[in-house]
Image 1 (tube, rainbow, N blue to C red):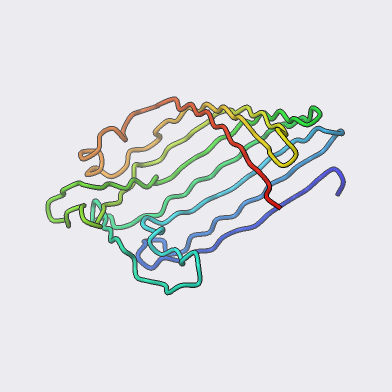
Image 2 (cartoon, rainbow, N blue to C red):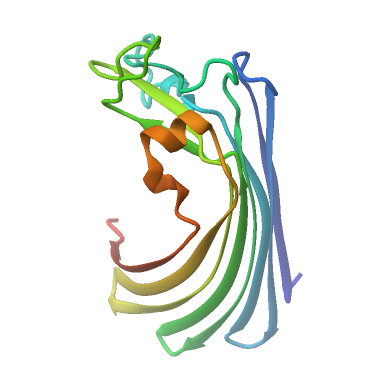
Length: 206
């Protein structure tokens, strides 16, 4: 409608090497326009990811689909492979000021079984994580909450630019694989603050 837009969709994936083979990732985005040049945005999503899934992506072109060039195994074979699940939500406000836009957004995420990939690690009884082989494990459950502010502007006729700053605080809710904590204790930090500054320039080429 003139004041509301809803976009929704989802992704289905199946990996036979996971304990829970079916992964479903739905998403809903809502944009409200209560007044001219003002928008309120909101989104809810759940993203499921399989360890090593990037090895099975189809080729970007129409070429031959070759076997994976790298192999991977679980850090703890007794626990096998577990998929990562991220539930997130955000609410934001955007305001147009002539050819510029100011946007403020708050967001929250809850991650279950966060995937960690390790290269160059040697684990007794496991293949050496070198020369095309790596290990994957789960760092446990985490949460992240933060805010972001963005400024977008039209620089020239076909050139757009933006500057975005965000800050988030992440916390560990539950510990992950014991072997992972021994090999990479830095992933067990109880909490941390992450700041990010992103500048972007886009151009339209007719």
